[in-house]
Image (cartoon, rainbow, N blue to C red):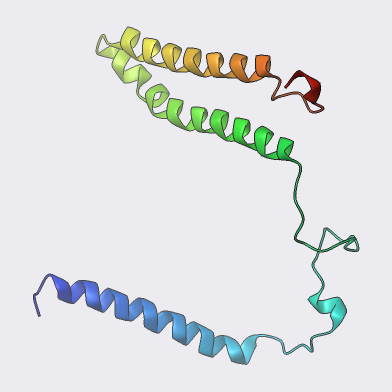
Length: 130
């Protein structure tokens, strides 16, 4: 066996051992409960379930979630440039950093206008137009 592979195999063995030891020790500490229909029912924020868990959601939930994720990622991608903006300004490259942020925001603003004009942000959509 190569010496480069020994630490990796040791690490994998420790991980697998930890999982099995944690499961074994957990058997002694976790409560033993009997399964009843009420215990096995799905939990919906304290409300009684009204139907099965497998049903289709309205697609507008997906559209709003997708738009949220896009603009949430925007913040995550702007943060590194904003974090070094002061250093870049001191080095004379502040205009470049500001231009990068402005271009990125303009592209996303264009995407927002496109989604808005298309009507995907409207909660109740007029399907006759399509």
